[in-house]
Image (cartoon, rainbow, N blue to C red; front, top):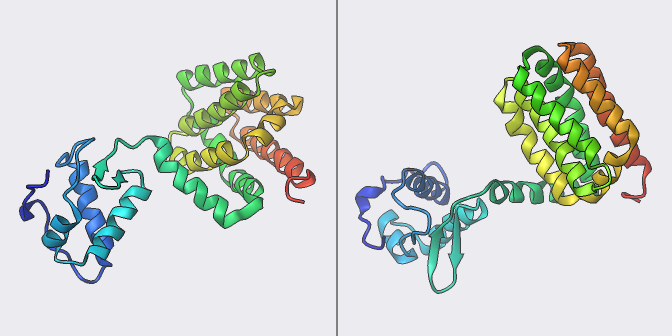
Length: 242
């Protein structure tokens, strides 16, 4: 792709930081399939000539794309377009949460969930479909089935909560909550596995499931809030942050 011409990109505007403008244009070109997965982007010298900026600006733009998991910069080869997975998108976000929250990350994330998920559960109770109920029921059954397998138990616990956000019929909730779940699984999986084993956790999941099935939005919200609050109380009483 080294022979790409200037017509592939438009002139940049000065008010916004130059590297951000360049990042946006390269990102758009990837989305529009000008560059396919596995393609090399034009070299730094070529991009410098196209955009009429310094190599430092080009490098900053490429680094931002690399941070987002859109490209990989290989020494001696150049910038290769990647096929981003959900992990390449969420891993930097999880690292950012960990940096901002420090060793309070799990309690901060649970506090956020307490503010969001009860309302999501209430909406799920109002909007759920038969298919939603089937999925929630299966995830709950698998939680019980794999009580002795902490990795699978926690996986199905998170899938249970994800399905509630889907059942809410507002896709934005799934988008908001997915990074929080990913952060908890990445940094605090062992702790959450232990919490998931508690019988009280299973009881709350069943109560939430029944409330959603009965279209009882008030009870669904109350049980969800209590479930997450109990988990937070456990974390704050533990030795994790001491």
